[in-house]
Amino acid sequence: MEAIAKGKYLKGSPQKARLVIDLIRGKNVQDALAILRFTNKRATKSIEKVLLSAVANAKEKNATADVDQFIVEKAVVDLGPTKWRRRVRPAPMGRAYRQQRRYKHVSIVIKGKDIEEE
Image (cartoon, rainbow, N blue to C red; front, top):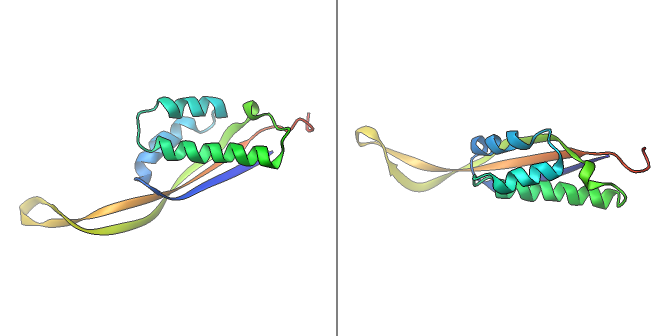
């Protein structure tokens, strides 16, 4: 059985979130949650919410499914829209750069066995 959860328009850089998502890809769901709780990165909170949503989706699909058997099969972070803020940041040689606020889209697919499948 497969369950999917997507988090869209989450604040933060997708490049930094990929560092976290690489830690949990292919791991057991319980191990992945433990890794996220003890990883000291800002992106872990939003990724943890999406992973818990995928677990809830799996339970909703099939109440007899064993959550301990689920594995993070696919985890992807994509670039969302980039908002150009009106604030100005000083740059070298008298220039000024506009600030960028980045957003990300997180997709997590978990897979496990049903009790009926065995």
